[in-house]
Amino acid sequence: MPSPLPAGVNGQETTLRPIVLITGLRGFTGRYLDATLRTRGARVVGLVQGVAQDPDEVACDLTDAASLREAVARVQPTHVAHLAALSFVGHGDSRAFYDVNLFGTLNLLESLAALPVPPGKVLIASSANVYGTPGVEVIDESVCPAPVNHYANSKLAMEHMARTWFERLPIVMTRPFNYTGVGQDEKFLIPKIVNHFKRRAPFIELGNLDVSRDFSDVRDVATMYTALLLDAEGVEGQTLNVCSGRAHSLRDILGMAERICGHSVEIRVNPAFVRANEVPRLLGSGRKLQHYTGLTPQIPMEQTLRWMLNGESP
Image (cartoon, rainbow, N blue to C red):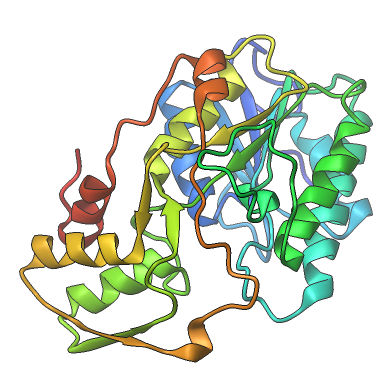
């Protein structure tokens, strides 16, 4: 049997202090959600791949149902944020999207349902990619999903599967649109652009410059997730967009970066970076999220870029 976790887990600490289990703690979003939850006095325990590096981490693979169940039983969380996923759309192994995003989530829900006291809230991060190209100006949660790639398909399959658990677990699902910030992997678009401007590269190769996305700041996303976990009432069984309500094209982003840095980069369109089934525009409505949390995004895209380029934080 594994050794017990420190005080605060396994019921050794008053239940007045939330014990939040984050899957994907070391990921981009997980690090920011961890910090935001701790400012609220929560105890955060993370499921991580590989070797646990501190007492608040538990090494576990979502695709290993038996070890996951054992890990969840050790933590006995009062709240759960399920962030772990295979999230890079360009990932080459199509089957892996379903192994991790669909069946990994199923393993987690089975583990949570087996606890003697189920958590009070389970937040599951899906993706706005499930909407595909809906042909409407602003996407709210009533828009019928129509995914166009394996990542989005795996997320929508996960949503349908998770809905079968709504009567057994207090689940809220989020559909985050694009978001970024310091620490995001450079295989994603905004960090790639930021890297080129920071090192004053002479040129950058990109795909379709007219693709528009609803970008949020990861710190705003962490704030929204924390509110849904700890504050929002009556949100169980709901699916909510997490977005800024503002869309920016790549041309917009490049122009902002140029103004901030005072540096021009030659833009070369590389056909290899133009994806098949590219979604040309994604713009979300966050009215439902605002209804449940009372919150709206606070950090505009240009401020996010200043933070990423120059370390200027709002």
